[in-house]
Image 1: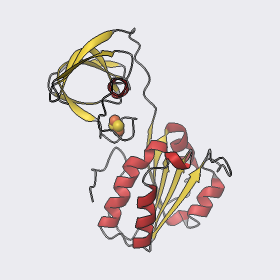
Image 2: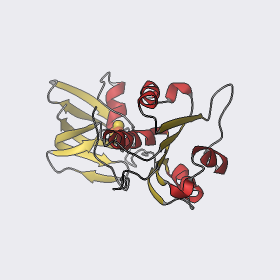
Image 3: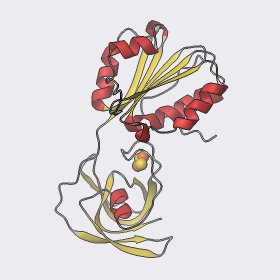
Image 4: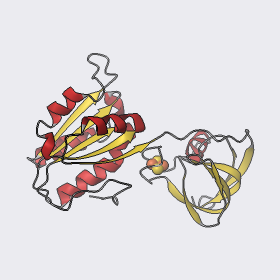
Amino acid sequence: MQISQPYGGLRLPEDTHKPLLFLAAGSGITPLRALLLDALERGWRGTITLGYWAQTRQSLCFAEQWQALQAQHDLLRVNTFLTRDPSAPAARINAESLAQLAPDLAERTVLACGPAGFVDLARTLSAGAAAFHAEGFTPPTSPASEHRTVRVELRRQGLRLDLPTDQPLLAALESAGQRPAHGCRQGICNTCACHRISGASRDLQRDALASEPSTSIRLCVHAAADDLVLDL
Ligand code: FES
């Protein structure tokens, strides 16, 4: 079982008897899953509940793993909410869903991750919880720079590609037929991180240029800004 490092403001409490409530929306499931697996690995003694909002059954991540984990761990409950399910669309997070997930909210440490609007609402609804930790994100935007094409070398593959400067590198590489490892596509999980051996890229979240050699960049939130050499 592979466990990622804790990420951002999300940390498990020290006391493994504390009941936990994980609230995830969309790609926010990636870091919360890592924390949840970490808790199970540590033999957590408190109840663990996961509320996971996704649009459709197809966009639900790790569905089989949730079933298997529930079968293995008596204290784990996973509830999914499909907001664009064709037959019975679920409501977005609200007071009712929270009461259903955790009637004992005052005892729970809540860990929430998802788009900023989801996290803000989760924070408001969790006002009565024992503790609240969250990480929100804003999807990356396209760079302000005009469309250009630059040469991107994938050093390990011995490939040279002409890629646009107005798309995240992950999307540009996929359009060019490549399949770089990735997870959340939101700059959260670090799965797409790779070394920029040389050249310049633009951090789309900060709209900032970066050109220090031999630096790790996340392909989903960086665009090429000039000719680049990547350790891919
Ligand atoms: S895919 Fe998760 S950080 Fe890029």
